[in-house]
Figure (tube, rainbow, N blue to C red):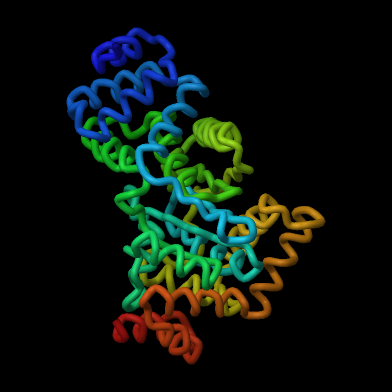
Length: 344
């Protein structure tokens, strides 16, 4: 008979945990049968002793299966998402998600809030008047079916073990564990019902992982997890030695994304968004390889299809798409900021 204390001792002594041990512990912690102090002990043992790739995959699967795993098979077409480890001015999701959706790929994007010094995708979306990131899963499915795009936060049904463990790691100085970071990110993404995932792993002074070797290790671990679970996953390691784009702050970054979708905005954010979006199309089975995928994303940007898709999802999720029209009438980011804030 498995006991939590035996699992903790096993990891404390540097042994590899079995899939059964990991599943037992995560299930018990999610149900409340295993208390916080024992979960804290296991996370700290993991922090010091690490996990093998097999353990990390098993942990990801156990956390994913602690809640509902979306089945989007009724949507005929590829489903893809993107995850970034975050950085100063990192805002590409609001650009690439509408562009990829405009190219016919379903993008069920379940995002997070700020981590450390950077705002999250949800924080930026909530700068749009009325935009609802707290949709129920049935509402999310409906928006996704109607627009090929849905932008929400983690619901109570998705990976509840991750929510509990993340809060625990945050107050027990065990956030930086490579295995725990990877399992936390990938358990949520694998629960989305996607076929493909592109990872944007930042490296540099403004990134969570400042050393390139650490960023590479994180990227390799997450890719191995995703591929081990039968998904098409790739990672780009991108520079965060300086802020991305010109704007920092949730409302300002949202405005900058709209400017890019209008064909303007800073080159670095636009080009990174195009590259990540192209990888999403490529992994989703876009014909003729990555160069053709880049061309499709650029066409969706140049034609205004991406901007129209963003307007569509804003309206479907309770926001006021008039803000896009107001911004289009303005010349200069400074005027846009003033009107945006007054409109709210």
